[in-house]
Length: 392
Image (cartoon, rainbow, N blue to C red):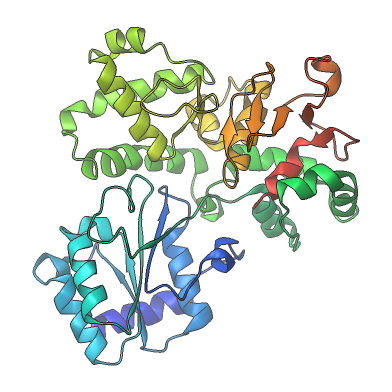
C-alpha cells in the first residue's frame, strides 16, 4: 500500500489545475458511489487529483489509484479496498476502472461491505452506468465531465473569473451580460482560438495540439469503442472510415444505405457504429422532437469544433463551425432538437434558434432567436454566439 500512497502524494503535490471546473461544485459529494464519465482528453484524471488536493491534501484517508497499475493483474479490487479501509481509508479515487474485469460487481461488493467508504471512479463516456451495469445502477450517481467551455478557456487564458449563466439568463439579459464582459476583455480573438484548440485541456501541454488530438481520437476508437464495446479489432478500419466520411460531410443526414455500401457492412451495423461514435463524443446526432436512436438522426454533427480542425484544418466552413459550437455548448445542459420552423435548433422544446444574423433569415418565425457570430454585444433577439460558451 505504501507505494500507492507515495504515488498519490507525488501526483497531488504536482497536479496542475489552472482553472476550476464547474462540475466540481455540481456534484453531490455525499453520495457513496460516484461515477465521473467523459471523453478521452477532457481532464478526468486531473479532475480527480484536483478534488483530492482541494479536500484532503496528502491525508492518507484519501487515495488515488490508476488501474493501469499491474498490481491489479494479480490482486482483486475488493482485496485492495479492504486493506485501504482497514488502514483508516475513507475516500478512494479509482481512475480508468473499466480496465479492470468485473469492476461493477466488485464495486457493489465494496459498497455493501464498507458502509463508511466513499468511492469516486472515472470512466469512458461510452459506459452506460445506469443502463448496462445492473450491479450498481441503483446506487451510483453518474456525472459527465466535458471539455473546457469557452468561459473556462477565457478565464484561463485571460486570467479572468467570469461566472456561468443559464440559457434563460442569457436570453433575457444578454446585452448587459455581454457589455459587462466586454468592458474587461475583447472576447472574439479568444473565441476563434477556442474554436480551434480550446475544448481539450491538453492544449496547455508543450506538444503539437493537432497531432495530440489525432492520437486521442484514435485512442477513442481503439479503447473507448473497440475495447469497452468488445468489437473485434478487424473492424477498426471500417469505423475509422465511417467517422471520416461523416465528419467530412457534417452536418448532414446520413445516407445509411450508401454508407453501408462504402463501408461494406449492414445498415444496422452502420447505425450501431454511429451510436458508438456519438457515445465516444466524436459525433453528435440531431433529432426531431420525439425521435431518438435507433431511428436515423436528421443530422449528424461533429462533436466539437476542435475535431473539425484536426480532420480538415484547411477546409473549415464558418457557418458549419458556428452551428457545431452552438450545438456542443447548448447540449451540455439542455435538450437540443431540430427546429420545425426551418431554423437550426429547438432548445428545451421552446426556444427556436438560428446561427446567423436576423437579416439572413427573414421572418420564418416571429419568435426566433439568433446566435450571431462576429459581434461582441447583441440587441433584442440577436445574441452574440460566443456568449453561449458561458452556459457552463
